[in-house]
Length: 386
Ligand SMILES: *Cc1c(COP(=O)(O)O)cnc(C)c1O
Image (cartoon, rainbow, N blue to C red; front, side, top):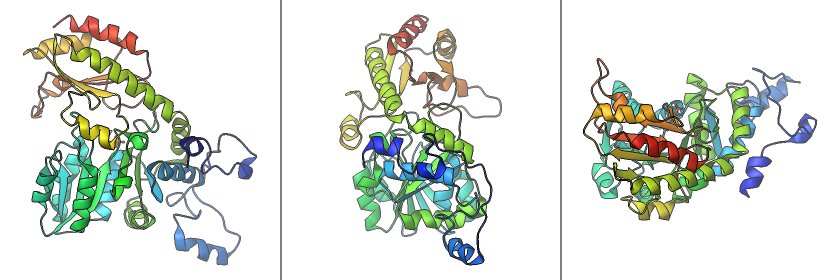
């Protein structure tokens, strides 16, 4: 199906609601039945029918159809957060005594889930350098049942060879899941390579306006049904109809926003790479990126996120540089309209916390929808302090 059809029309039965161009927010917790017979029929599949909004809601259902079509999977679930999506999909597919393989340096709360939470239930893990499929293979144990990938990852954009990982996992009967937030389904479709479950933090590009937190899981009917019937219905971390409506609205412009953000980031990253005050720029679309070839092979582009390593040995200088920036907001998250800066230095010297493993010279930037030349001017003047 054409991308335009998905973003503009799929799932929207306008004749059911006065031919309104924008779908209604069906802000109802429950749905009434004409007969006991119909109730009995509908109860057999709560995910497909309308009984109660923890199970399915017509506004959320429009969004689910669009997201599944974008990823090329049979079905999708939308949850209250990206962290929730990762946890629900993982918990539905592992049991006490199992072993999980996870890429090293995943998103921070994914790491916490695997490292601090799963051991409570007797589930062991290995964090593995996912840039090397051989290392993943070497980490497989007889009780390995789940493989968690994130490609590119959050701060340094390491990739995994998706085709190779899927083939390897299939051979060992291991379920694969990927955090595909960076690329969105427009730049990477992991299910096409045989990955079983695709997760998104819809908080980032999918919604794209920095006003909704949500998570997405895409997969086959069978796998989605399993997660729904166990984790979603029992733990219940669903999205509200209104938030789903906001994401549907965000998706209308996904293609435009993503392309703009990607191209602007590439433009800026190229210029910064040549800057004398900068040690190194990490961005998957720069030819200098260690896995640039693989990126070109399995992705059509990447998020407008890049990471700089500044040429300085002073944490204070990094702080001054960040303070000098006027056109980038200092904030976590990304994927909205606004450009952001996140310096690793801000995670240093926090009472009661260990300093990060990544150096304080690392500064991550997200390029939003503003004019890239206007943003570059700001970077140029701030770099003068170094
Ligand atoms: C933000 C983010 C998450 C967490 O998503 P929430 O919606 O904040 O729970 C997970 N993975 C990646 C790559 C992210 O950027």
